[in-house]
Structure formats: C-alpha cells, structure tokens
Image (cartoon, rainbow, N blue to C red; front, side, top):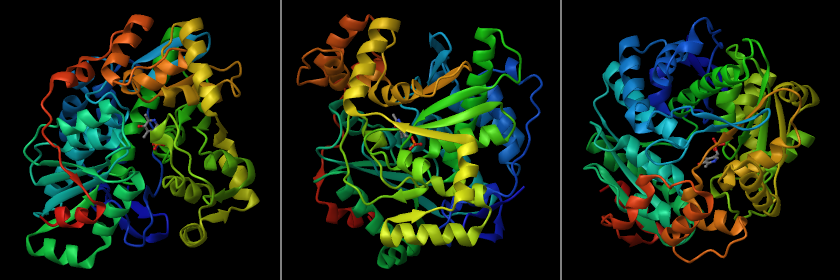
Length: 482
Ligand SMILES: *Cc1c(COP(=O)(O)O)cnc(C)c1O
C-alpha cells in the first residue's frame, strides 16, 4: 500500500518516503491510497505498546515488523508511567482519554516519541545520508515534545523557537532546561506569529537551501502535516475503545462517540482513520474554542479564515488554518483537482466553500461545536466540584462541546493536556485568585484538588536554565544555517 498527495494522486510513494518528505512536492498532504481493514480479534488483550506494534504495520507496510515492535516498546513504555492510553470514567456514559501521562505532559508526546524513530529508520531504509535539521516554531507544547523526541538521535539536530512572551512559565522552563547534544532553543522577540513567520522564511529561502546542501544538511519540520506524526495517534482510539467496553461490560460493535479538542485537525483526523479502519466510532465531534472557524465550516460549508484571531486560555487550539482538514476534503470528495482548487482559494483569499455533497459526506462522520472562554471556566469548576475531575483548559473545551452532543451512546473526550501545565488559568476557573508564579499556583492547586502535580513539572523549579538567548525574528535564518 502506497501514499499519494491530496492534490495529485498520480505520484505514489512508500510510507517511508512520505515520512521523509513531509509535504508532497505540489504542496498537498500524503494520504494512504486505500484504507486497510483491521482484524479485531484479540486486540482487546494487548498492552498499549503491543497494540501499537499490531496496528502500525497496516499503515506502514514497508517498515520491518520487528523494528516497529521495538520502537513502540521504547516510545510507549516507561516514559508513559504505565498510563499510555489511560481511559477514566468521568461520569455515567462519559470517559476521558488522558493523553498527558508522557514525558512532557502533552498529548503531542504520542506522535513525537515515535515519529523521530520512524524518520531515522526511513532514512536508513532509503539509503539517505544527509543530516536532517528540524526547525520548530511553537506556542508551547509542540516545542518541548519535539525536543524530547529528537534529542540525541543520530543524523538529526533540532532548533526550537518560541515567542518570548507567549508561553506559560512552565512551558518556557520545560524548553529552556532541555538536555541533549543536538538541540537549540531560542526565545524570539514578539508573538507566535513572529516566530512562525521567521521559521517559514528560513524554509522558503533558496540561499539557505544552497548553503545547507553544500554541507549535506536538509531542513525538515515536526509539524502535524507529516504522516509520521498522524499515524501514531490512530492507536489510542482503538485502545480507549476497548477500555470503555471493558469498564461498561459491552460487546465489540457497540458504537462510541469521540469528542476532540481541535486546532490543526490532526488528532481528530487520526480518529477518522481509526473509524475507516473498522473501529465502531459513531460521530467524531470537533470541539473548537473561540477561534471557531471549524465549527462554522461544518455548519455552513464555508471555511473562512478572515476573522479576528483570539488569544484564549487554550492556546494550542488558537489556530485559524487547520491544515489537516485537507486530508478529509480529499476523502470526502475524491477529487484531487477540486482539493487543489480549494486550497488555492484558501491561500489567496483566506476562504473557500465546498459543495453540498462534500459537506453531506463530511457530516456523516463529523459534528462540530465551540466553547466560549466563560463556558470553559464554568466547565472546569463544575467538573471539579461535581465529579472530582480536574480538567485543563483544552480538555474543558471538549467537555463543554460534548455536553451538546451526548446521546445514550458512550462518549470519550480526549484530554490533551495536564491541568498543571496551565495552573494559573485553572486556578482562576476554580474561583481562586491566582498567584503570579506558576509554581505557587501549582502548590495551591494541589491543595485544592488533592491531586499531585507530575514530578517532571514541579522539578523544573530547580533545573538550571540552559538556553537563555532572546533573538529578533530576523536572526532565525542565521541560526538555520549555522
Ligand atoms: C496540539 C493540541 C491540541 C490540538 O490538536 P490538533 O491535532 O492540532 O487538532 C489540543 N490540545 C492540546 C493540549 C494540544 O497541545
């Protein structure tokens, strides 16, 4: 089974090539030419790493099975503290799939603990000898998760750029204290857009490419448009499905809905593939914050990014261009020229409209809603009080939206960040006055909730800050070619 671009189905590549390339030459995203059907017998008994090793070969058929077995064991073993895919009951019929028990307390660990291994192996399989240089612009979570995933890997180095005044104190310290011999971390003057624009400029600069090529270095990104980042995320839909059946004593085939806090549409796209591979998922509910471009899209068929950008308490979902939607558009309409046309309109005018039929097809699998900042704070307070469940801001957005879509079917909400990553916002939502320091806020929140913060976060208080440099965005290019 091969992959082709959403904008040109003629050119086929193996999964290893798709992962090395990241983006297709025509700007499209790689998707599998057909979606394999999974044999379900026995999967319910497997541990998380075992399940990953069983499922990944369906979508990465050119990789050696033994390699995948070892890679998934290394990625999802001790680093997840025995809680990979941890699925807990919040209240009757409602479950939280807690995806933040990994090394950086963010769901992006699932992709970024495995994808770097897939990349190194793909280069080996394809006989590629160049050094890969990863550039990441991050508003917080991706940077740290990528640093942990790529640190000290052969043939790779990684530079991360975050906005000097755009992350929480915890997020900043997570990156500034990063270990590893092949990593660099820089605070960029300005906001996330300044950092992102600087990184994009380096990627597009032909002089950068020429200079690097002389030294056999090639730039790459850790963004979620890479198939290697999407594919690991399919596994936890299967894992959580079986955990709900187990806890509710239900037979295989029972239909379960999933509600996903959404930004770049990567996580929920993985759920779509899980469903098409045979997992009995009912609706995939896309939950947005005040940046509700996706909720409007599913309501009207028009994707309109020309709107004010809101800085919210769920910053990882503050996105107006959700890149992974392109994969769904192709699957819904099956017409590469049509997809290329819509994406051209999006880049030129910031808006496109799909036809009735495509919208209908999308609505068979997806529903969408959004949650205001006030509603999100109310949810955090109410779930803590009524159910003893402490949710972070991103999870709260999904809980809020899920309430509008709940039926007699079980519902799983994806819980994407540990509440202690955003301790001040969570404290405020609980009606407390938040102290200025994140660490004091953590202590208060621990007392209030009775749940202790993960060591990897509290430890940061005493970690030396290794990276202190603040640079203007114009310097990103110099760092890319250093
Ligand atoms: C990245 C992120 C999201 C959004 O996931 P997408 O795949 O971009 O839709 C949601 N919550 C948290 C905490 C995240 O870090």
